[in-house]
Image (cartoon, rainbow, N blue to C red; front, side, top):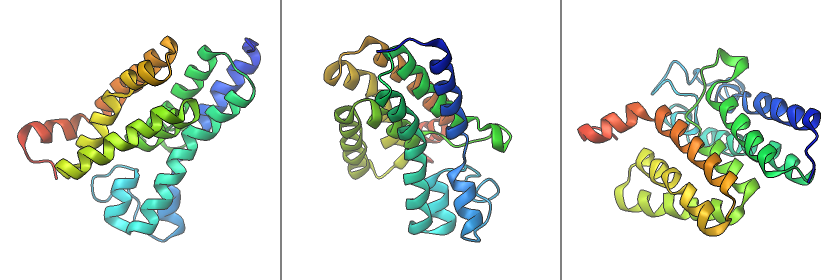
Length: 195
């Protein structure tokens, strides 16, 4: 595994820029749909695109948001990067989605991008998160709750299925940010008004 600071820095910056590409905004523009930042929940993410544009637009947005996390981390993995670099590349791609430099630093909530990041780092962890999401969604029928529970369990899944302390810390950091971005959803969940 390499520890070249120049290459590591380039990978991290590239990951952030890659994550900053807003799939929701681009998909809606191409498909002549309203800007997701001005409709529904005003969030440029797949769930809001589903509300304003239907399943096809939402599916494309979801897959693209996942790839924004998956591709930069996979490139770093293929370059045999050390775990610290991998973790920083993962965080950078995730931050790019949350705070995109190309769209005024106003991005989505990060669920799909986080899943893409985790998939590139450890497919068993990603699979465990998907199964958790499906189980909670089936039981409670609340998308935000499913995402929050799956994310909250990600550090445990890295501990159980991967064993990397660095990835455990990275997933905990991503989880904290994801909860922060879902703070309005959490408030509605506590009030019993979340759809």
